[in-house]
Length: 111
Image 1 (spheres, rainbow, N blue to C red):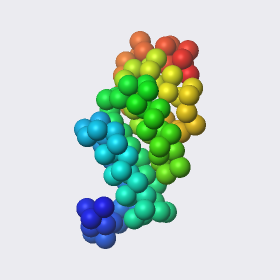
Image 2 (cartoon, rainbow, N blue to C red):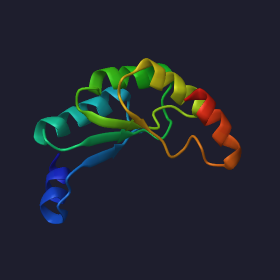
Image 3 (tube, helix red, strand yellow):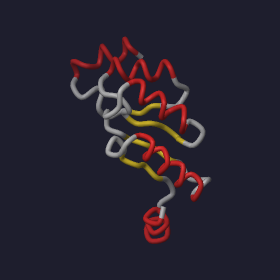
Image 4 (cartoon, rainbow, N blue to C red):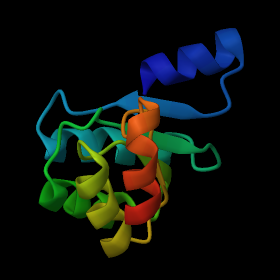
């Protein structure tokens, strides 16, 4: 939170995206909750770079759905992301699912 405050003051940050998948999910949930408490009107995003299972992704989405603008690449691959998307209302973003033209048909088919 201190670093986020400093970046807000120094650089004018208006939103925050945390890289996740490094610490246990409960610690990352606590970090996002702390940011939400300190910056209640700022968009918050969390990106674990595909490090979580579908079940962990869903648990984190349930825990943080009220404060996240979106969850980016919580699980790895189009099938896992499609399952997470189907089972949560938290918006998802990705820059890892479709990385080649050959992957486009699967992404459209899975939604």
